[in-house]
Length: 138
Length: 69
Image (cartoon, rainbow over all chains, first blue to last red; front, side, top):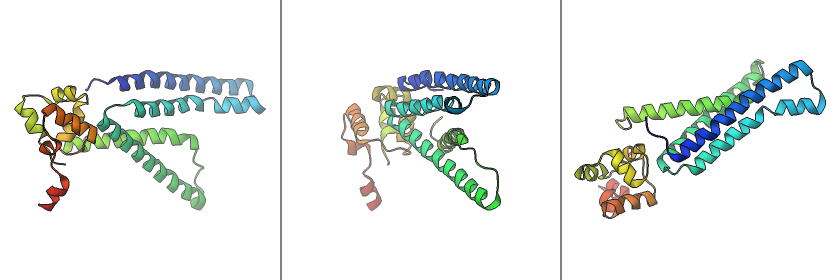
């Protein structure tokens, strides 16, 4: 395992609090909605609150991309992100046509971010595997 | 892009990690450049050339001349 560089350490130091905030805000908003049954503006605010930490996670990822000084790592990261976007677009495009033509359940759009994260990770795994098979990185 | 990085490193008995530290990049970067999986940017290519006290074209093969062979 390689020692993380300063940009990677900053990324982890920002990412963990943002994800912790997401979990706490999500549970708190769900609890408040179930117990107090808010309406009107309060309901809108409660509904949008859990997305704010996820926006922070996106900002944290953007900051890491900007701060990463190692051009090879940055290039791999961008490739994996674009690959993740491609997979997400493929899934949502096929799903959209299935909704129109075959009346499958509506795609919950809040799943787009976790699907992209998963696809981003999968592409990174694929790239690492490809490098090892090519006799490169250990 | 073909290059002589592995040979030059071996001549100095440097590990990939040694070279990476001298260039202030990751060991993965050195590995990727050595195996031709990644072409360094011009600033990094100049850093590599400066480190070995050589011209860039003495380390990296010119792709247009390679394909003409």
